[in-house]
Image (cartoon, rainbow, N blue to C red; front, side):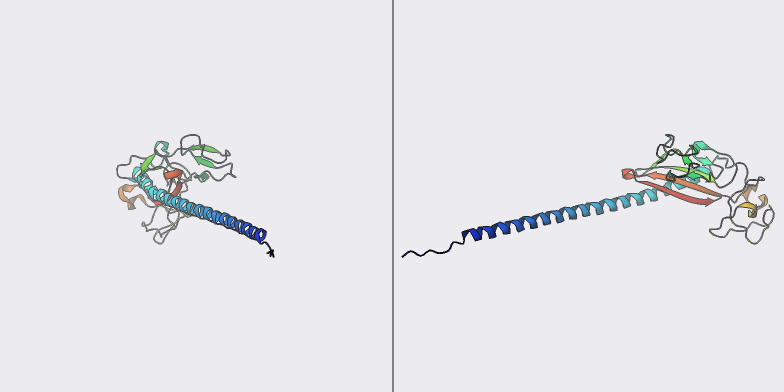
Length: 239
């Protein structure tokens, strides 16, 4: 007597095929997760590196600012601050329409700083009024390349006390008269700037050497650091 048992070979083969499919799907999912994790880590490292370069470039700008102050206001300075001196990046007028970064693409009346001495090729748009503002010679510090421009915040060249020359200066405080050159010199309040008819003219007799003082200056620094990281820093000083 021969017994015939039902065969399960075909059913087992189908089960093994389904298991292989799920294993392959799991492998693909794990691979994608691994790639995403690696890319996330790489992106985070890149962002942190860029932030570090940006901070380094911004910190280095202080070196250029100090160089500008020494050049224009230092004891050994031979700069006449009443006239432009393009050779050292100094301008006796404010240039209010200046676009220091070259990113204000919608303003055709903007003035650009010729940072690289190549007719402002860095600008993202060719619309401009002029590209005549020349920066200082290049300064290098810890691998950072820096240039600066100093603007006296006045409407015209010449002495700040000249008629019609409006300069940004400390706000009038108690102890003197507005619009005159008389009255005792008084210390300005921190952070206050006053322009126009309310300007305070300090009497020549109240300052060292009889020279006129009391004008604000704007120092603009561009720093190019590692991986072409670019940082712009502006400083307002009072002299």
